[in-house]
Amino acid sequence: MGAVLAAVLGASLVGCSSTGGKRAEERAKTAQAGRPAVNTPRWTFAMITHAGDGDTFWDIVQKGAKEAAAKDNINFVYAHDDQAQQQAQFVQNAIDQKADGIIVSLAKPEALKDVIAKAVKAGIPVVTVNSGSAQSAEYGALTHIGQDEQIAGEAVGAELTRRGRKKAVCVLHEQGNVGHEQRCAGAKKTFGGTMENLYVEGTNMPSVQAAVQAKLQADPSVDSIVTLGAPFAPTAIKAKDAAGSKAEVDTFDLNESVARDLKSGALGFAVDQQPYLQGYEAIDLLWLSRYNADVLGGGRPVLTGPQIVTGAEAAKLEEYIKRGTR
Image (cartoon, rainbow, N blue to C red; front, side, top):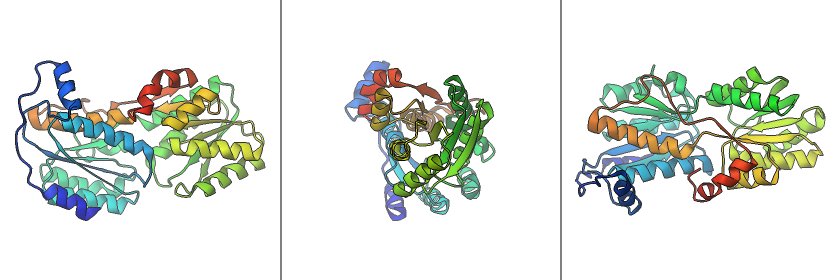
């Protein structure tokens, strides 16, 4: 992956497109047709995330980034690894190849602090996305785009309380991810009942199911399971059914499976942080920085969530979920 990133970033692709549309509608049409809507140089922006293989959430982030890149005449390069050291190496590759902008997620901020400082020192604008809002400004990024994980967690705790739940388990599938810890801490803060953390091996779904099932069997008083990612919701449902539990399963993030389960009642609610918007706005903000020295947020994160989604809302969003933008 590192070699591929370096090779693509190293390509000298400078040019201009035809003049963009005069109205927003025309810009949208040209972007949909795969033609840039601007005549700025073909800058290269690299996005490096902590996504693991097969994580559908990041497919949606990428989709937003790619569509914004097509509109903005950007050469978009993507790399990912759930190991922070490798993620840092990808950022270093982008610096070495003189990328025009870098987008990076900070699930494990300390591991990326030094390399982000190198990018900033080299004059490469950096936007952080999804994780690491608390460290973004400190590390020198232009801004952070995503939901505030503490606030998102607080929304979950309040919703569980509103639903009359008394005992919940927050399932953390990636140890060391500061965003996940913040979600569970936020939920615990506003929840009127009691909440425990359950750490599982997120790369092993059978193990996740076994751990959740064992917890429910050992403690029948648990009436809520909260997963921190859409791919883990169906697994939690299977665990609940196997344990003979009546606990409600709720989750962070949306995908087609989550939407179906929300509509059927198998899931209680989901928390949407609009990943498409995170990818799209990250590209747009870097383009605006290069083109017009614009910065959004005023030093504070640009929030894309949280939004509580129930079965009724899922039905309204279904067409967007199916096309992979929600």
